[in-house]
Structure formats: structure tokens, C-alpha cells
Length: 284
View (cartoon, helix red, strand yellow):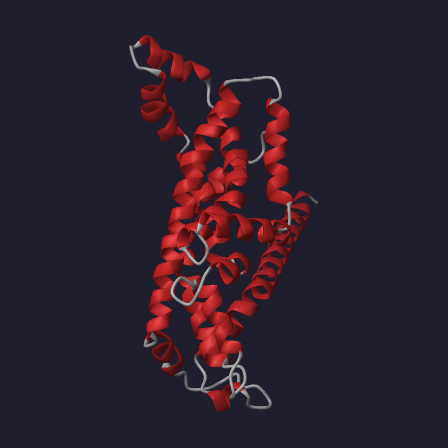
């Protein structure tokens, strides 16, 4: 009987493991299908894109990628996106990390209300603040500049940084800083040489989330930029018009190129991203 029960237990475990893997494969296929479909369209000619029934086996071509990369507007838009996204991330981190440290280490009256006020700002729909921001930037002479887009993105990414990093600072034992003070370090030196290295996963996680927000945004960039300062999402919208209709090849090829930098950066920092999301975002 014991041998039969052991065989049955192994079969049940094997059945459970197979079921779990099949479920994970099916879930992965569902999430990856849109991305694979976009990449597939980018590797087709115009006739192959509109072929009926759709072609699932074809000879791929790189003419859409060559056409997109040969455009001077695409390279300019790529530089604009890089500058705007990097500026937004740097500004959000430089302001948000000290603010989160202050929330975690210096309790003050009204601190909880102020902290949740920041979260309310993050919850607002972007369209609700777009017009006031445009009026403000117009009076400051910042419209159609990359600085206006950086400030607009930082408005929404800054509360996210404060929310994530506050949890990291609260999880960090105060004794580590106190030990540095005993050794003669100032509060700033202890923050720089002791605290910041220990919260690196949180910094990476917050940076990636801010980068994705700024890199993929269309609304603010469409209103606050012109032809010289427009970003990649705004440029991609140009493939949907024209006398020949929607250029699906160019749109999907540019979309794949837009996804690639963030994808590479996210995979490179995957370990820190998982640690940051699982550690810092659960407190507060």
C-alpha cells in the first residue's frame, strides 16, 4: 500500500507541475502575442500586411526599419525622447529621494496629510492638469521646449519616487546611520556613503518606472512640443495619416524601436527592479 501511495503522490505532483507550466506558458503567450504581432507586421511588406488571410509564414524584410532609421526626424525624436526621459528621471530622483528620506526620518505635524496629497497628485488624470500647465508654461516662455515636458513628467513621477523610496528608508535600521555619526560622519555623509548604497534596488526600481512613464507618454509631448522638440510617441502618430492611409509597416517598426531601449534597460536591471518593487512598495 505504501508503494502504491508513493506512486500516486508522485503522479499527482507531476500532474500539478505540468498544469502549472502549461498555465504559465498559456499566460505568457497571451501577454506576448501583441508584441509578437507588432514585430511580425514590422517585418512585412505593405502587400504582405494587407494580405487576406493573414500570412503566418513569410520571408521577413527589414525595409520598414531601414525606412524609419533613414529619416532625420526619427533620429531627432529619439534624441528628444532620450533627453526628456533622462531629465525627468534625474529630476524626480534628485528631488524625490531627499523628500522620501525626510518623510521617513523626520516626522512632523501634517506629514501624513502631505504625503497622501502627493499620492492624490499621482492619481489625477493627466488631461486634468494639461491646460493649467500649458498656460503656466506659456507665461514662463517654456512652451515647445524640452524643459516644459521634463517638468510635466516630473509632476507625475515625483510622487511615485517618494512613495517607493519612503518604504526603503523606513525599512533601513537607524542604527546604521547612528554608527556613522559616532564615527564622525555628518548626516549628509552618512546619507551618501551608508544609506544610498543600501537602497540601490529602490533607486533602480523608481528610475525604471519613471523612465517608462516619460518614454511612453504621448499627451504632454503632443501639446507641449513642436516639430523640433517632439518625442518618439508623437512622431509615431504621423504614420497614421497621409494620402496612402496608415503606414502599418513604419508604425510597427518605429514601435519596436521605441520599445527596445526600455526593454534592454529593464532586463539589465531586472534583479534590482524585482527587489525594489517587493521591498519598498509594501510599506508606507
